[in-house]
Every structure is written in structure tokens, then in C-alpha cells.
Length: 246
Image 1: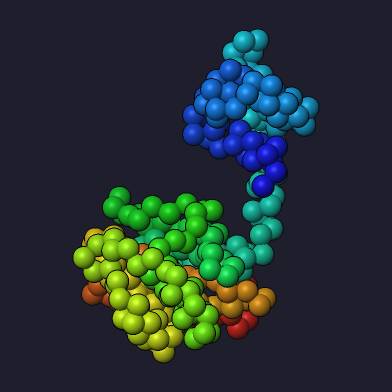
Image 2: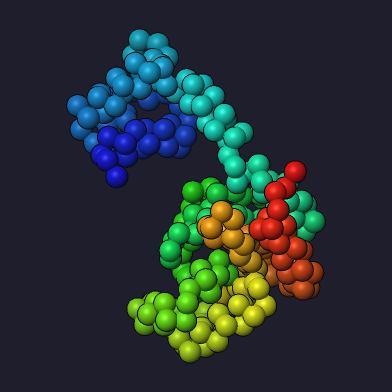
């Protein structure tokens, strides 16, 4: 990534994290980058109206211009307009977190997160990456999207580090689990990545791209409803894959 682009994004993430006006020296110190580099990025953002000086020597803070730009982008996001109603409905059916991820090769990025009302929840933010392919339902779904030859190649290099006592650490056992998920149309995580956490993921294809929908919750809340959750999850994925949502 271009250094200037990365630093510009770092600026906005810094303000979101600090939640206060920041001086040039504050920004330089908190981001560990030279004052001169900070000044160049800050001046460009000032010139474009994305940041303003609160008062002389009182620091800088983003204007609402970025919010307005992002709001328009979000309102016209094709995957959001297609999936929002169905995924929000799935969340409301179980009152558990529902996640949508886009897959590219062995990588997956969460695009939408609909959170449960329960205070005890699995924390995922939009933009987070799918990791631990061997121990998560979303990771298993990515592995399940591969051809048998590709899967064998990936498993030969995959680190099956145990994360909980239930993590699968045998490559043959993981291959069997992936095959079971392919047959069922969904993939389960039964406390394999985090103790007492359960997740179920199903894939769907849209515009020749692979997406994953995951329902995740503490095991105590989801285990007794897992068959119904799988049924509703597959129903939602079929609707997302086969026809536009209105």
C-alpha cells in the first residue's frame, strides 16, 4: 500500500480511537511518524475540508465531510442493499450476531456485522479478516470452496495450532470435517477457536464471487437451536444467491 494512503487512513483511525482533537505533535507521536510527514497529510486534509483546526493551538479534528462521503457510499453499496434485509431478519430470528464476509482466494473480509442485543457477544468489526482457517466455521468454509487438489496443497502447509481442547489438529480429521461441511452445505465451529463459542457458516455465490454468512453465539445459547439455525441460514443463502432481494 502507498505510504501516503496508509498514513491518511491511519489519521482517521487515530481520531476514531482517541475521540478528541489532536495537535500535529500528538498525531506524530501517536502514529510514530515524522512531523514533516504528518504535516503533509494534515495539510492535504485541511485543503480538502476533511479536517479543521478547532481553535488556534487547540488541535485538529475531522469535519463531517468524511461522514457524508461514507454515508453516500454505504447507502449505495450493492451487497448491503441486497443482503441487509435478509441478514437483519436472520439476526432478529435468533438474536445472535450475524456476519457477512467476502472471500478472495484464502482471504476473507467481513463486510457487514449485525450484532446481538445480548451483552455477551463475539466481537467482529467490519473490515476484520477471517483467520484460523482450521478452527473457525468461516475458515472451514473457505477451505471447503477449494478443489480437492487445492485443499491438499493448502493442508500440507497449514499450521493446525490448537486454540482450545476441541481444535482439530489432525489434517486427515480436518479433511473429513471439510467433506462433511460440503455435503451439508454449512460448516460448524463447536468451540474449536474459542471455548464455549459456537458458529455456523454457509456460503453463497453472487456475481461470480464467494460470500459467507455466519451466525455466532455462546454455545449455551445456540447449541439447542443449531438445526433450526442451519435451516434458516441455508434458506437465506439460497435467496441471496438465486434472485435479487427487494
